[in-house]
Amino acid sequence: MSTKKSLQDIQGEVDGYISQFKEGYFSPLALMARMTEELGELAREVNHYYGEKPKKATEKEQTIEEELGDMLFVLICFANSLNIDLETAHNTVMNKFNTRDKDRWTRLEQTDEEN
View 1 (cartoon, rainbow, N blue to C red):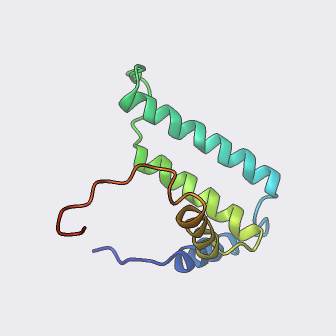
View 2 (view 1 turned 90 degrees about the vertical axis):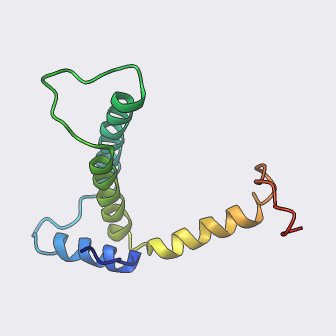
């Protein structure tokens, strides 16, 4: 049975893991390179599942979920290394989408009861 974790919990868990090593967090530039690498691995998996490039028989079986997890871990390391609270970052971007971009996309039709 899994327990739900807040972004603060997740950032703390990653920080606890990284803090046990002398090396600590990589530099922002190194983390950017790692994030780019992980994004490439995610793109490869998406292409295998939804694109025209099937896996070779010799390629390791991985999942999109696993690659998204890798991306999330590196993103959290990046945020932690720069003391960025991801919940605050999320709230900022959602505010932007709900104000500046509120009329940008076509909304689903409302039912007669909602009108």
